[in-house]
Image (cartoon, rainbow, N blue to C red; front, top):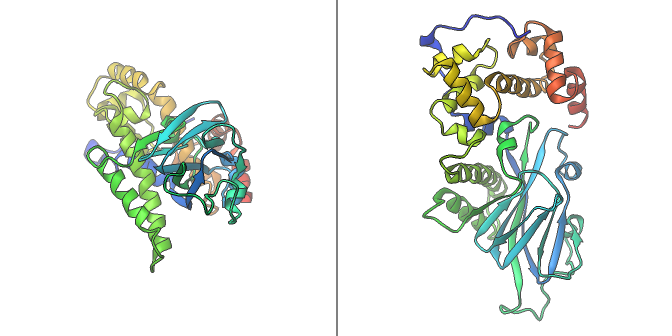
Length: 339
């Protein structure tokens, strides 16, 4: 059973200094990799493997999602996911495949498809513009890379993002921060200067965060889901409190008290906005935090159970297996082997 602990006095019950989105972005430990500036002569097509298949290439563990992104500088591309979903990305736009699904990039019909491995081989491929190409030759110019999103399982942010997120990166009036970071990133493709690699890594982290922030800003007022909940002054505050103190014995009543609303109205509003009850959300967040804590071999499973609000290791193990699919000890062994 969840551990029975008294809540601290209301005067000391302060939220984390971070908002809920910052909390989750921090927990993912975003990093970036594989920044390529490519040019293809139309027609062309390139297949990109899914996150699991890319894992060995980037030496990531099984709990890291690899999300490819593509910024189109010239021409346009069609992105087709392995589930059949597709979208067209025009010059001045960026697409991020947050689902981690395998996908094909293409422009024009009837072309042979080359693989990700062929692109990464370093040599010229069949779609590289030849010596006879000119400014009038139909070509596509794009910047490609990946975001490495750690601790992906049960992450509420990743669950809330669309399979393909498409945004303008050439509109300083609407997305000034996104426009700015892409502009800075492009400058790093000039002849390398001291610190180039470090700076590019930071730009990639910021690029991922700014793409997500731009998406949140663009959501309609009446939309639902985790990202919309962050903008709700009541539900967003409740999420921050849950995230900041997952180990307390939360109930609908004491959470409702913290956000000054009746328990019945709070429960209904929470469920309507997020699509699940407050208590289910709390349990999922506890398991998410526990999965991260299991990375620390200095912590026993009993200690972790206590930290996320369980007085019984057996009850914690049952809850963990129900949500993660493996017992805590097996999960710990599996993720360490894959690192």
